[in-house]
Amino acid sequence: MESARELSDALDVPVGVTGISTSPFAISAAEEWDWHRHDADELLWSARGSLVVETAVGFHAVPWTVGLWIPAGEPHRVTASKGTEFSCTFLAPGIASPPREGVGGVGIPMAARALLDELATQDMADETRRLAEQLVPRLLHRAELLHLTLTLPDDDRARRIAEAVQQDPADARTLQEWGALVGASERHLARLFRRDSGLSFAEWRTRARMLAAIVMLAEGLPVAMVGRRVGYARSSAFVQAFRRELGTTPGAFAVSAL
Image (tube, rainbow, N blue to C red; front, side, top):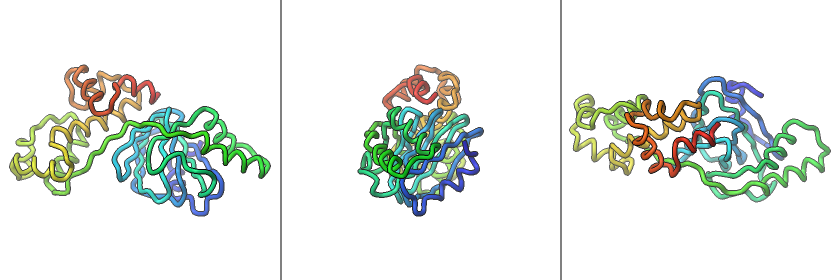
């Protein structure tokens, strides 16, 4: 497998991609790759752990059981937690119809995973490779992913609060207390969060906590510990919030990510 640093080069790749090209990567420490785009369709998929990918439509939690389809030209940012093993597959235009329109989850059955591995590691006759490459997209299917939208406020004062919450999701200060720090009233800050993100401050903080929790769960931390680290004194309250925002329990997500 290639190193995380080599991935920085791979993320800029696919100019003139022909056929299907896959590169696997093993992440020894948490890594983040800033906004970028590709000239070819991309399939991000894991063998272990979980990715968090931000696109124009929000954040996508990508456990090893599901891949993320990213059409050519779509800007995205990738975060991989420690211990994650994943692959970048680039598909040239015209190989076959894409498994879905736009960014979204893609189911990758074992047959497709095996074919991608074979294409990446084995020499094949040209005709055999062409047929295998045409088959791979036909084996993929649309799937659901955990998805959150979390927009940072445009206003500098509200954004400073949002970024502080992202740095420490367990920070329980009220909007009034934050206002005293940034020089704005609670009412004004509440309007800014609602205007810029469509969420109240409490709703915004909950989603920020869930995003942080996804990364920690993918690293294998126990549910109760993750709950405490993102600001919940009781595991039951954390489980309830996670289920409300993401439609599943943190325990179920942790199993899918390991």
